[in-house]
Image 1 (cartoon, one colour):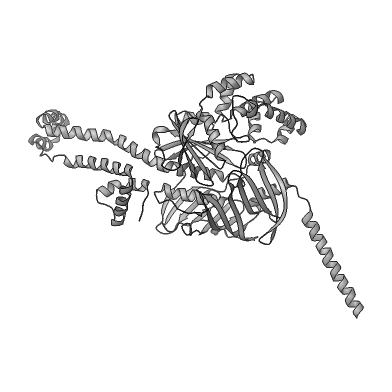
Image 2 (image 1 turned 90 degrees about the vertical axis):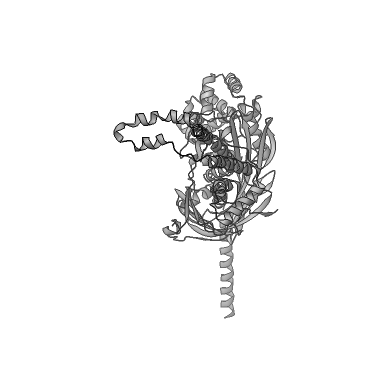
Length: 439
Length: 169
């Protein structure tokens, strides 16, 4: 009897040990960090969830903690019900992937606007992987679930991210954004989350409450236009940034209208972050009272620090230019200073001489929204690879990946990478004495 | 009840005409005490309306009624052809007409100034809203937070008070 008990006990111990070993083995299975990032990017298209999220964010010179009930139905439906703080409690956002409704119960007002759930484009992924290094920081528990921890560090100074990616679903359970000059500027985590729910369609449809006042808030025209096309559209000169922090490239332009205010909107992205430039005739908009007075390229400007977002406003010629972004102050001021310097024609001549191209080509590429280092890179790469300018622009902007371009050219990817890296070194802002790179 | 600069600008004319609810009127009054640009705007509106109100109520000349009562068959030409001579004989009418034309000419200028004042206040909120909406296309951005930013801007653009939010760091 005793022997049988001993045998059973030993068997149980062996089973537990074996299970533990299997579990440990599963935990230690190496997953490349780029694969974990891929999981996180794909998860919204594959997983439904419902949970409570806590967000702590910089707001001016303070921090604010926000609690929100967040529900997501694949591929891009979303419902957000804000719980706290008190002046946010009750706000509802229902997004069906095309239109987002924002309802404010205390005012019985509803706002209809564009979706908050942008589609993941291959260009974003290419730019993200091109401009950020992804490192594996191990596995941690988040609300009782195992999560891969990865860090995304930009190759050039900028905001870093840390993500806790659910091992089972790929959902981001926790995230942190870190500005090297200010520390953590945003932290978000699920305090509770449920997966594999069959959330009803009706939960993601907005029904207008009785007596609610409705506002349509589609202020930016859909689609994207080049700066040259925008200039023809609005009738005032459109300023294109001569140089931006390395990695930022033109993502699109549009006309924004609100009441009598018409502005041109230029967007620049590095795949993980965005800098926006708004330009409007100076006569159509006065100076805001918010923010503090600073100088940009010797011109008077106002800097408004909203915490997570930062705004820089200055006047140039007959234009009022406003830059918005989540970038270090110095980066924003330096990038603005390059625009404010107003050396467009001199730079066109300098760059065309440097890359042995005609000024008309340089000017045409500027009209497509390229910065001067990108213009130099595009023309040099097109010459070295034998590609046409259109294809080269798509590659420089991340719409065409290195593997796709190598496939098209029938050359090994390593050889292409070498050519690209050499060209990037030769045409970087640091190698061009006429341009100083924003840090 | 408190209102922001943009909303106060919208209510000034109604305030001047005494058409607001008591609490709205009190809020505009409170804002006027603090805001010099709104006080200037209020003063401009008051003067303009005062000028319009001060226009004399003149009796129409006898020729006017004759012209109105004249049979249609007489045609419009002769009736209107009398107006220059009527204006010459009635200088008050001529001055009133000139003043109305002047005020109509000033409307775009006054409206342009008011629009610029409004645009200065809304500009930052409008642009931050546009930026936040565009940020939603960046794959790793937290959309629940962007909902806060865009939602706050919606309220300001609709003329509501900005949300205070935040706690000391």
